[in-house]
Length: 241
Image (cartoon, rainbow, N blue to C red; front, side, top):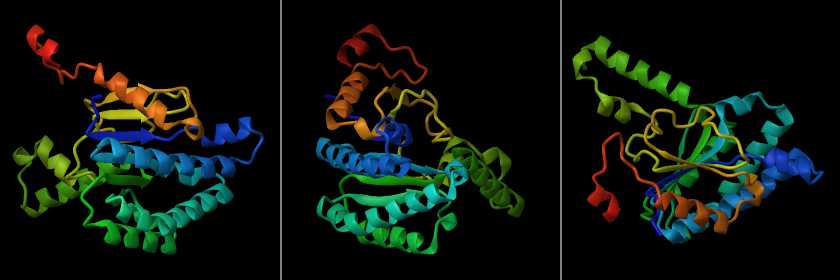
């Protein structure tokens, strides 16, 4: 089975799952966190090198305050409980997004988890928290503009590599596969630049119902894709792939 080097997941459907089970929305988030843990472990076992999880978008700040507070509590508890397990499983944890918007104690927990796992050499686990791709690209443009204004960089020196190195994901390969649960078929402000040649996999499964078997089905589908990156694949090359 062909495994994507970088898998990115939009974990969608926690609220709808809770509603279908006649439970509060927050219960769906708790169940979704448990599923995330299983999928992280499975990706590590299968040899995925990078896993980016869309945990909390910039738009999620607009949700009811009680739900936002509970999501921050889940994140805080996850980091405190799972950091040692991440180390044990050789998983390196990092974060992208506007971290300064998080509660101070959550920022402390995030920083501690990143520091504790920085020497791990297995799966690179990235949480996109308070993240929005439009904001990321805007910040990238501002950084480059400042360098141009200061004379550090000339406009004709700016290329795709320049932009890549100024993105929050600098140093991380673009996602090979972007998976979204719940039946929605959009990126929702997630990795817009990085997704230029990503493959997409959409499933009607709500995130709390997503299983390791569903992940393998997605990988099997990915293995049958021909990734041409705009080029023409010769017949003999297609046979080899």
